[in-house]
Amino acid sequence: MSIPRFSHDFLARLREAFRRSGYDADGVIGALGGAAHAALGRGEPELAFRASADAGELGTLIRLFLLGSAEPEAAVRAALAPAPLDEAMATGLLRGGPEHLRAGLDVRPHGDEQGSWWVLSDLDADVLGAEVPGDHVLGVGHASLSLIRATTRRPVDTLLDLGTGDGVQALHATRHARRVTATDVSERALALADATFRLNELEVELVRGEWFAPVARRRFDQIVCNPPFVVGPPRVDYTYRDSGLGGGDDASALVVRQLPGFLTEGGTGQLLASWLHVEGEDWADRVSRWLPPGTDAWFVQRDVADPGLYVGTWLRDAGIDPRSDRGRAKAADWLDWFAGNAVRGVGFGFVTLRRTDATHPTVVCEDLRQAYDDPLGPEAGAWLDRVSWLREHGHDLLGTRFRVPDTVLLERVAAPGDEGWDTTVLRLHRSDGPGWQHEVDEPVAALLAGCRGALPLSDLLSLLAAGHGLDEDELAGAALPLVRELVRHGFLEAV
Image 1 (cartoon, rainbow, N blue to C red):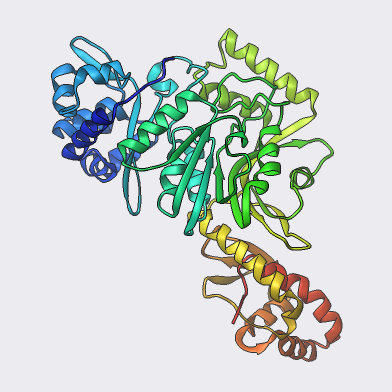
Image 2 (image 1 turned 90 degrees about the vertical axis):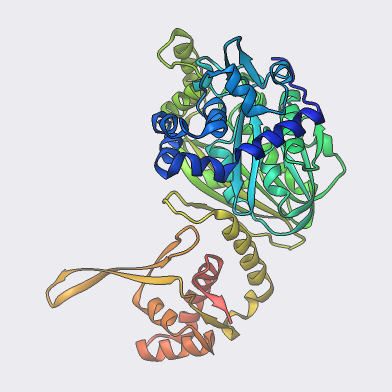
């Protein structure tokens, strides 16, 4: 595919057209309405076609760029004015003609609570009606959105978006980073990201190259990365998903291993990653071996996919019918590789890293496969804060006054017994964040009931030991590891 090049003048005129018609995140929702917009997100476009029919120039842009419709040339010319139609055709933004035109690129509004941007990317396989090319630039999909929600948004001076793709992570980074650098190995990706940044009047440094090579000897306060994490045989069919490394989860391992070396002291990194579940090996041991010294790390596993389901999903993502001869051949090769490497599943999730000079960095790997609504980014930042607090104050937990946050609930599960209802399960729930849960026993529940910020932990343990006839030293020895875990998960906070 040719590399799209956009002049500053053309992008300025295109921006004027979009603003005039209201082609932004709020405008699209307003024109379509909630039901049609939700249906479009499910891949059901008919309601959106109907809702956009009376929306004038905005409706034309919605059908052209969001629904993949062929629109009359006169209507497209009017909707894009003052951007010249011939230049839109020359850049590849539009295709077709002479009477009807289609989008040649995906241009869609994307917003957050502060406003809206426009993001340029390639058309997906459903719109193309064919397999995507090897240098395909992926649009804003579920993986991108999940990383956006999992990224901590605290003010920083410098931020690196490694493997920027269409540039959407860098867009969000401009909200909280003073200077943003974006890299990619794909010339086409950088061209589209550059157009995205200039269309939105943003300054982002763009550098081409593989992995961390373009920023050698530089350090950043924060790094975000949505790498080509698809696991499988060592080949590159599509640059947006395949690393071409030794196969398996080598791409995720490379980023985790090298990223901390490009952070300032105390700097943080967050990325999407995949890891193999290999027969006879614990996934947590596998990913922990990737870490360099001096790194706090939180690995959160959001899903584990069966190899067969995994292969079918990624074949369809590229526009390949798994039932075709080509699809079956690719699937066979992929599944043979999984079988030959004793792969029983593919884990997927988020990794939060922090460069630290601590003697004993904190490394935690845990499953978080339950559904939750709150974004993980604020929780990741709070997790790092709590790790720092434990590192500084963990030696004096007994002298600390704790309180249970108002968002923590205690669930009792009881079953019929000889003398009424017998409690079988006591479970703590955090009603905010990712919905952490902890099963506890009656003494722990009683201890937490006393954590109201009035008495230090040592006094509470003394009262608990006396009330239950327990040895105070043994109780403290058993309670302190649990208290650390409850602090790390936000069930207890120091007053």
